[in-house]
Length: 306
Image (cartoon, rainbow, N blue to C red):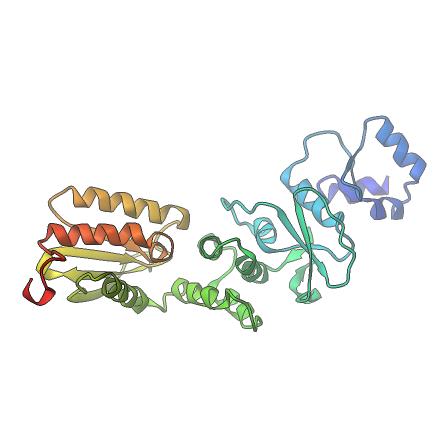
């Protein structure tokens, strides 16, 4: 049966449109469903087996059920391109503006004014090119934290490159998160070594902490950089890790744990990932203040006389 050949390339999922185009009649469809050999998936698709519906089949059903020009977008498209360990929630499917939107549980079908056929990968399941999906996924993310993690993990896992994502970002003229995405890409590209140093000094000033007295920029063997920031008078060293220093979902928690251990020992050497400046600023600067106090600094003593 021609329909089964098509289904083999789509994880066993067919749209009703494809099914009828392959010569299956409505009577044949009813017979297969009644016999328990096939089953429905949503209102527009059929699964031509009764085994478990694997993730690939779920994604095919999401696209096929949304219409002929539908395609995976955002994190769902990145997942197909190889992104792992990122919880993306609902499957995002984009359709051109004006297209009919068919709803399905667990699938977010949205019309987009940015639809361009050249942005859609035609081989396999229809989906946005990885760099396009990365930009859109970051702009659509629920929070700045989620956007930053998505971009970082996409680059870390080699799904696409910082440079390609940056080119796609240039096409976005107006969005509230455009500046954040640009900053994250700059950090991922290793072109913002001074940002961490500047941010630490500004945050110290805002919190009434002494500003560091010396800084030195270093590059690790893996290509990531860190900045040694010293408060020499108080015996405190802060290592600022670049945004691609370690796995994004682990680096902040690891650094907080490292700092807790360092504060209980003889040497006060703290770590601050650039991600920490975005997501856990209060926790890290509380630790910096604890390190300064350990070295003899006090808010009760004017800094000039300390």
